Image (cartoon, rainbow, N blue to C red; front, side, top):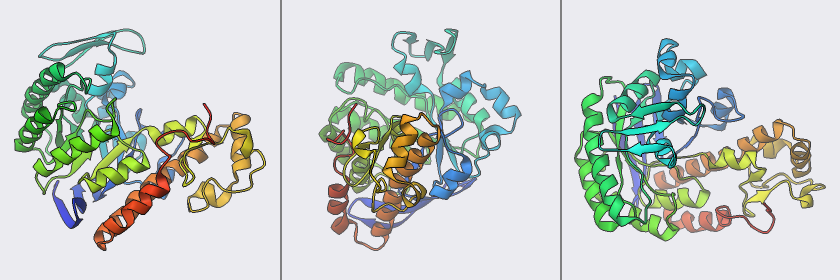
Length: 375
């Protein structure tokens, strides 16, 4: 049910197909994030039109509201949000651990307070699996602990706890129509990352995630970690780099053997008036765009760029019209989905290496604000 077939490789870059109960995922792939059973400002039909095939939802948020038992009663996430394709849920671990002032971690699990009403809750590996089985996503994640990447002493504690919790998640899992991915941790310590990669790779999981990156380390540290980890992983399992999503990160990640990405960045930027472009990241609130009759990006074929000018989009932003968030989200998601699709084709036709540098040059400046974008 969850077979992964590598169709082509170019260097360490891979193009493949991962089978799930709700359809095949053609990798490499970028997944929009639908934290609360919705990708903000977009309908499922719009996501399909964009070419999205995998959507991520958040265990922590859906557990608190509307509740995983209610979602199970209503037929699970797919039926609830009317998304026909494959879905992935995280374990809730990252959100719980980000509540640094309101949670307590021990070897059995995490006790935390709801950000909604302050009520007390507890997640264990077993509880996380139970919630995710109620939600019913195709891909579910082992409960892990994400630590400060530069705290090498605590990274070892968190990694060892993550390993124990991964085994408990496997033991707790009951549904056979969900793929449980283990998660590699270890901060940016090469020894810990090597140990974690080997351990997680030894588990009977149909896929492997790399966690604890894009959380404060440098780009060089991220790349070094991926260079170290991916050669240690089995070829017949997809590799998921969690929470990473600038154009440059996707290109560099795929070059290092990553198959699956997700990130809130494209829709979050859109809600803050910012867009990806071949000119670098732009903030359309800037007064320079008030009379600009060009699309966001002359090279883009998305609905927004085919139809509207920067001047119109800036007008929507200034007027606080909700349509602005929708149109900018369409563009940002299209940019990433199309980029990954183009990279996949280049791997299949053995031209990735010759095109990668041009893509990196085209998309440089989208990780940070450029001179056309102001806070």
